[in-house]
Length: 170
Figure 1: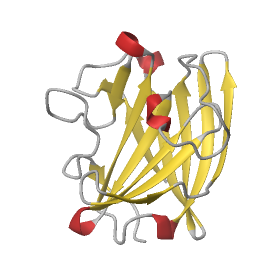
Figure 2 (figure 1 turned 120 degrees about the vertical axis):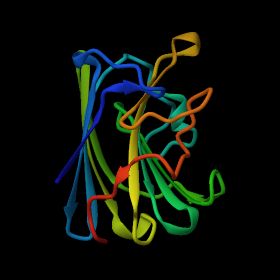
Figure 3 (figure 1 turned 180 degrees about the vertical axis):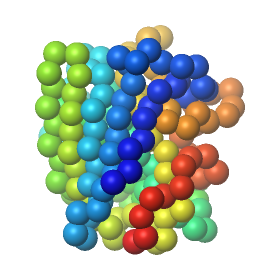
């Protein structure tokens, strides 16, 4: 099991302890399990159920898993039980998306928890690094947080060069 902690804004400013997000990764047979414990900002749920296009425009925790040759997978999990899995072959060059996963989320007052399982074959071959982010708020109150901050003038999470080593041999 590997624990990742979102304790800074996207550009590295420290968060208060109660504002931090914990994400745990573990192997579960032919899947990778993702457990989330995050603050709940109270953002409204997106329309629909299950896999939702544009989920990043809502309250969400995102796990990016980066592999070789620019391939990576973005897994988005929301407090209302929505998810989105996107695969890329190069920065922002989407190959496909909308893959089904097992995901359950629960909201309790000011925090939410969720557990997801994603098939290993949806991840890039031989992952090398990962990073996790949290997005919440509306309009000018939008907040972007990161386990490993990303350099630049604005938050850009499609950064295969930024993250921690991927913890498992797949």
